Length: 146
Image (cartoon, rainbow, N blue to C red; front, side, top):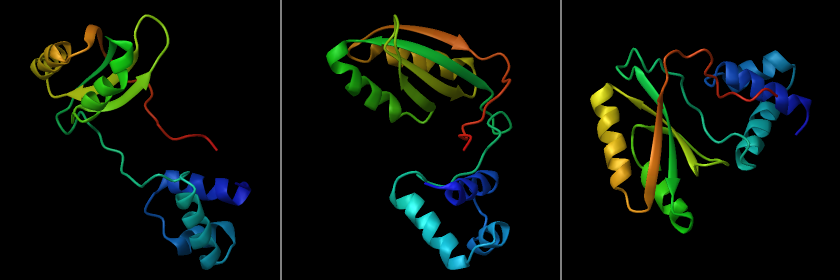
């Protein structure tokens, strides 16, 4: 990956709908070169997909929580797979410390969060959870600075 690839990534992070023509114009390269560079970034797995940023609160999902979960070690991947299939779950991270994973999830209300936690605790091999409710989002940006 060279500086042109980095510039292409930055342009796509600003606007994932940017056309190959606009990428080429912005960087002073041929449209075919822009296309081939983007295709190579996709094929190598650096560009994993294209998406939009939503205001989840305006869509009715105003409650974000960080849930720490302890699970039986040999079943950790199974528990993560079950949780990853749930629509409310945004991120799952394996972590160090007293808990095995951190789950970020969004809910419409406290009742939905309560049901989620109770369901998680009923999952086989989940031994303990700690739930933190987000009071204010100071920064939320999943773009990587390149």
